[in-house]
Every structure is written in C-alpha cells, then in structure tokens.
Image (tube, rainbow, N blue to C red; front, side, top):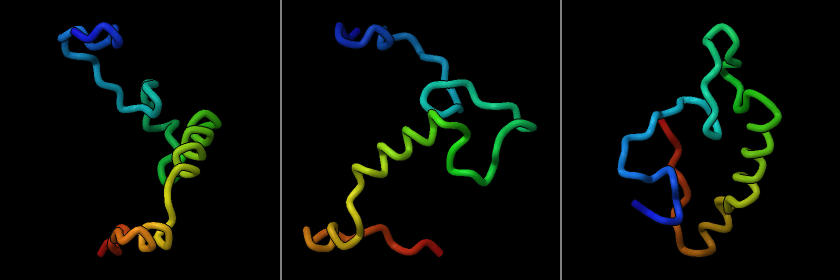
Length: 70
C-alpha cells in the first residue's frame, strides 16, 4: 500500500475503457473515427500534444522519431 495513492491498496482496480477514467460510451453513441469524444477529451489531448516534441526536435537530440507504420 502506498500512502500517497489511496487507490493503490493492493486490491485489483476496476478497469475503465473510457478516456480520463470515465466509463466508455455505448457503441451507438461513440464517435468512432474521431480523436476525441467531447470537450474534456479535446483539452486533455491538447495538453498532451503541447508537451510532445516534433520529429525535427527529436532528430536534433540524436533520437529517431516514430517510424512510418506500414
């Protein structure tokens, strides 16, 4: 048990297929093919993307950017 995380009590946690810890939408309501489902997802994605480095920045640091997927 970790004192800083009350959810980590050694018990299995219920998994959630939704974004940001929310329950997933029913298939009929899900916006499949979209990167986000709602404004909360859009804000989270924007925050995540803001912190990502570009391929050029990675190459300048001597790293290899993600390969093209076939």
